[in-house]
Image 1 (tube, each protein chain N blue to C red):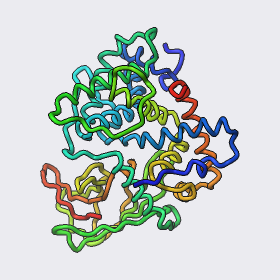
Image 2: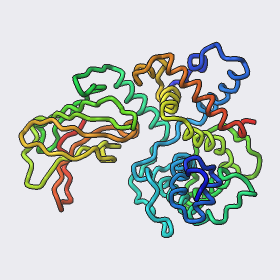
Image 3: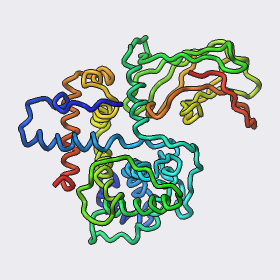
Image 4: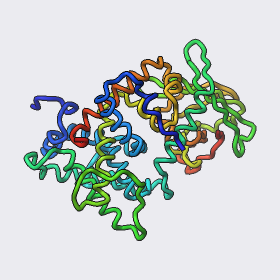
Length: 184
Length: 198
């Protein structure tokens, strides 16, 4: 019997449970990380079909390797990132042409992981978006990636402009809380 | 190109400087990172079995960039904002016209897109006109498309006469798609002729 529901559990706890064959824990991990994995794969491989395959390979690897996860060596997020990176790199090696990757900010992570490490911040940000409520997430997506002004977002969602601003602030603050470790 | 949001417009001027700086760092990250990709319907749920990995068939050969998705979303939402009108039980957010294709050239349809519900469903009211009489056991199916190819089903329907109104549902992020079609489906048939298209 688990003391907390899978939805509330940390990534590390979910990996541990998945290693014990808990399919429900694995599915929660899938829903937390499928979009970040897909995003990472798309940036690395530049092809949607190959990226879909890489997502499948990544989660197959997570399911198989979860038993080897050691919580004392670090939290679950970086472990998942490493598994995803390896699966995506393996798929990328099959290419004859260089992988396509969109330009992005340099990662704050040091080390020899090069291109994959440069995606770490984006990975964490996309993962953190999954922590937002659907209302908060909507205003962020519309404001940042649809080209709508705040007034247009309010009209689109059918809510007052003040509510849009309140939700936007709350969403940014929530993301800042989640990413505090990465931002330093 | 999607415009970069104005941070001051987003959060106003009344935050303490420390909090403002904290949120601005997130703002910069969001701008730099771009949107996470929407999962394809095939990736919406984990595969049923992972002991023997099940790899998805390749559905497309061309790369679809996240930027294109963002632009499509902007274009799509821009259309939505053009007008809203409603009736008793169905508030129309946007109407789209479909035209007949192939042997159904004389057909047409109007898709009324309802208001997105809290669960993520777009209700659809589709008025069809002049569709061919359906063969025995046949039915119509509406799809959202990418690059003209069916990508996600919005449901099946039949109409008894040449005109009719049907209610369907699109439980998807519409920004992932670029059009709508209706196909004629027959059991055991490999052909899926398109009869209506936006």
